[in-house]
Length: 139
Image (tube, rainbow, N blue to C red; front, side, top):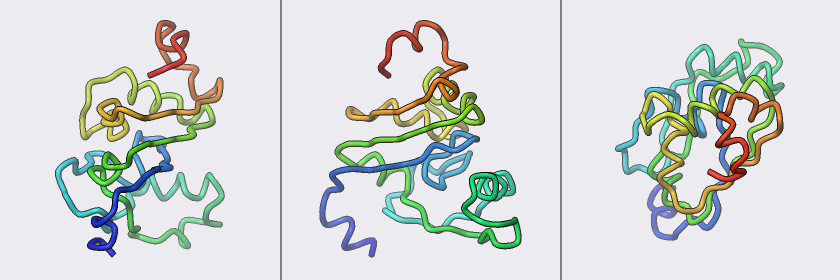
């Protein structure tokens, strides 16, 4: 799979930002260096709990211990990245992603380095943004 994916560019990446500012399943501290397009990651307890809260699994026992995720480098190779980030529970992650320096402790912060990223936020997920950024309506 990795060879096939690496052979062609990805036009559009539709990614999620998690409550801890993870992108895809790249939890903090995220690996910003691996060149593999897809990686197997261990899901931490907070990530597992988020999966249950969001209704993806009925309870923690059903959440897998590992997941296949697009790597951070592969996400950044997408020509366009779109992320829809709703709900108040993600407001702090959105604020950290947009207002803190790029750091693997805040994986979503690396999206600021990409030339074509669009985040769709609702009022609740944008609630913690600084007034300047909130009024700007863009990155």
